[in-house]
Image 1: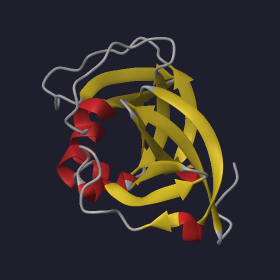
Image 2: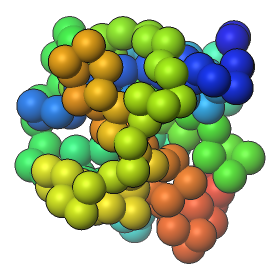
Image 3: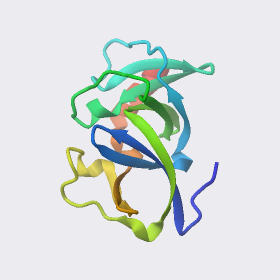
Image 4: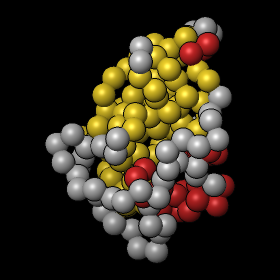
Length: 156
């Protein structure tokens, strides 16, 4: 996997509802098709459950629910992006994974005060690339420390 080059960042572009989001490639492990998810009782509403991914139990988060958006049915375009958060692999359910782009650092702008329905703390910046506006997520802030501890419990 290619890492940040200093002046450029490779990002995975994915879609949730009508918006395009991005996460750095170095934080993503793989992109998977939807597979059976085992529900885990007494977890946060945005935690869909766990999957057995190549022998590793991985918690799955529905980003739509995390962002306070209405849920949607899983279909052929739905993907699970496996990312590393707080030394743990977590699957993020997204509506579709579109592209991998090489972005110049200068094309990443600070987040505006209002970006759709997503909380500002989840956003690292906005990428303006070839007439596309992408919201670059700050994965470290998508989950609180307490939520990460809860996911470690789910993982066991």
